[in-house]
Length: 126
Image (cartoon, rainbow, N blue to C red):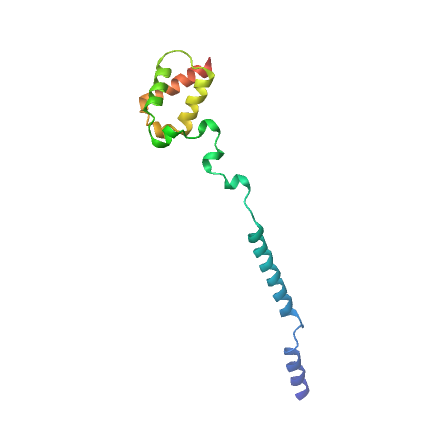
């Protein structure tokens, strides 16, 4: 009986040697990999660009738009739209860009929006 107790007590203390060391090495390697990733990671030039720089040039805010002083541009757009003539390709592109990206700055009324989109639709169909 004493012999079986001695065998069991010897087996309990005899885990595989180095298993704790293996886990320590794995944890250290992971820590070094994560640290290296954050140390050497550099965002690309695109990520460092300002949001406005990513926009197409015609969609970027002008100085007047940044300041909110767009009354003259708004009047010009409405004059072009109300002229009754078909919009040129450049006018159509400029007005479309404003309506889809900057209309909130111009504060067009719902009637003005309808006129503008009607003119854009008519010029696109011709």
